[in-house]
Length: 314
Image (cartoon, rainbow, N blue to C red; front, side, top):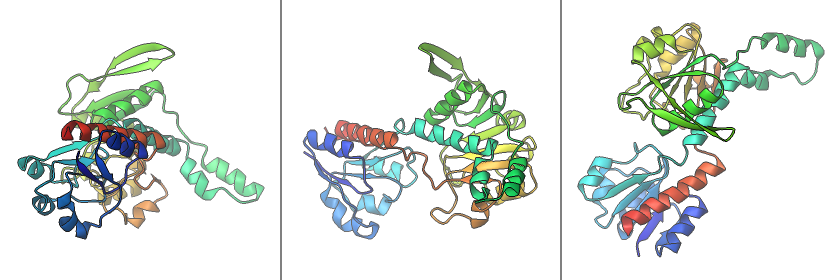
C-alpha cells in the first residue's frame, strides 16, 4: 500500500480507483511552502498546474516514488531531475484532447460569426441600435473550404484536425516529430482514415487562413513578428496550448495593424494576471485557461491518472 497526496484535486472517480487498489489517498492541499516538510511521508504526489515540484522539493523527499500530473504539460515539474532520482513521472496526455480541440472551435466559430462581439454589444432595447449591430456583424465567414494550419500534430492537434475535416476544411500541419500522421474518424457509422499533409513552418504560414497551436512551451515563442510577417493578411490565430508560445506584444501589434484579423486565446503569458490590453482588444475572444475544463475531461483525467499511478506503484 502506498500513501498518495492529491495536492491540486482530482475527479472523485480517480480517488475511488486508487483506494480500490488498496492505496491510502489524502485528497487535500498542502501549501507550496509547507510541502518540503510534509511531502517526505508520502510515496506519491499528484498535481495539476498550481503545485510546483522542483529540484529542491524532490531532493527533500527521499521516499517519493511517483509524481503524477493531471493534464498534459509537465512544465511545473523538474522531470529530468526526478527521473535521475529514480522517481517516475506520469501524466494524462489522452484524457482531455477532445475537450481542448472543441474549445479551439468554440473560439473559431465565435470569431467567424462575431459571437463574442455581439455578446458584448447587444442592445438592451432600441430598434435602431439592433439594426446597426446587425449591419456591423454581417460579414462573417464559413469555415468550409478554409485552410487550417496546425502547429503540433500530437493527440490534441489530431483531434483538432478531425473536427476541421468534418467541417469541410483543408488541414495542413507542422510537426518535426511526425511522419505522415493519419487521423481516423467515424462518420455515420463508417470509418474514414485521412492522411494529414505536412508542411514546413514557412509553407504553412503562407497558405493557412487559420492557425492553431498545440505544443508545449519550451522557453521562447514559436510565433512572433517574423512568423506573423509570413502569414496571409487577415489570418485568424487560436492558442489553447500554453502561454508564451505566442509573443503577445507582437500579437497586439499584428492585431492593431490588421495583419491578424482576430485571435482566440485560452492561455496567456502572465497567468493569472494576463495583459489587459490583450483581454480588452475588440478582436480577441478569450477564456481563462479552460481547455480541459469539461466534466468528461476531468473524469477521464482522474481515471487515467489513477491507472498510471497504480501501474507504477504496483
